[in-house]
Image (cartoon, rainbow, N blue to C red; front, side, top):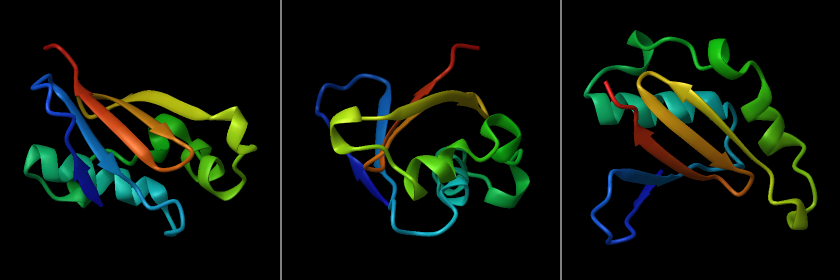
Amino acid sequence: MTELSDGTGDDVIRRQLNPERDDPASQLAEVVADLTDDEPLNLTPVYGCIDTLIADLFSSPPPDEADACIAFDYEGYRIRVQQDGTTTLRELSA
C-alpha cells in the first residue's frame, strides 16, 4: 500500500489498495490499524460493515467507464474505495 498525498493539508488520507491482491478487506483493516496504531486483528471485521462488496468491487469490476466505488463508515473513518484501488479515508467527527 502506498500513501498518496495531495499536498492540501486537509484531513483526507489517501492510500492505494492492490486490486490484484486477495482479500481487500484485510488491506483496509491494515490501513485503519496503521492509522490507529493498532493491530488489524483487534479491529471489528470489515465484512461486518460491507459484507462482500469490497471483494466484488475488485473481483468483478464493471467497465472502466463506470468508475464504480463504495463508501462506508468503519472504525471511526469514512472510507471510499474506487475500483482501481484508490482509497480515501476521512476521520469522522467525535
